[in-house]
Amino acid sequence: EMLVRDAILELTGFGPIGPLLDEDDVVEIHCLRHDQLYATRGGTMSMSDASFTSEEAFARVIARLVLQSGEPRREGEWTIERRLPKGSRMLALVPPVSSASVLVIRKRRRVDATLEDFVRVGALSKPMASFLEATLAGRVNVLVASPTGLDAGPFIGALISAVPTGERSAIVQDDEQLNIAHNYAIALSMPDDGERGDAAVRAAARLHVEHIVVGTLSGRVAATTVESLAGAAA
Image 1 (tube, rainbow, N blue to C red):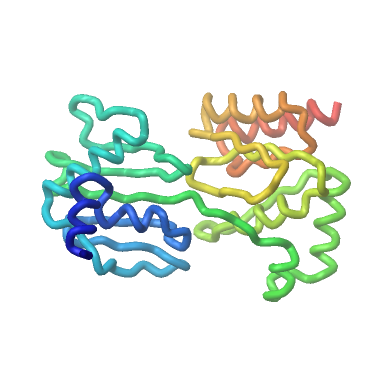
Image 2: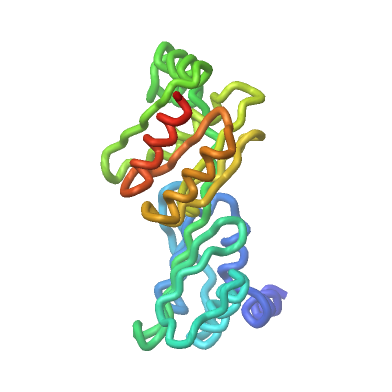
């Protein structure tokens, strides 16, 4: 029965990748060749017990993922980047740019952390948590700076969770970043820090929400964010 199930998944679905896409704990999927499949859970990467039966089967699944993105593969496109449903991002390398097919999928993370969670683990003092809650209630600008390599996403998510009930937040961020559990949050995609990112921040400002969260401050996005804050203050 298991053999039949796996065969059907590979012939008509996404093979061994399918269950990993549906598993909430999995944040990244790496398939460096058809018989080596890795999944990242809780910051640890481990090899999956399942794999593809052949390079051809692996290539067919990559093609199905591309079709699911709604953007067909272009002629001569050997490095394929697509956004999948639920916010996941895929990067595939196919011959001749690589000797064999390669696939990496990064899933959007769901962030449910609160400031109280940071206090509980000793990462934040209770007075500082109270101060940050007061700044959010007073709609004071907050800049979160983190060293290179340190993920600030959970802390930003905790700040958003502390937004007073009934107030709206517009979150402008890269597609790969955060899936915030907040009833009054509006998500906007920031494809880059250039013209398209600039347009996303300006769109968020026009929504006239109580809070705007910009995931990355660089390039034109940084200047536009400061400009939007100055406009709101005026």
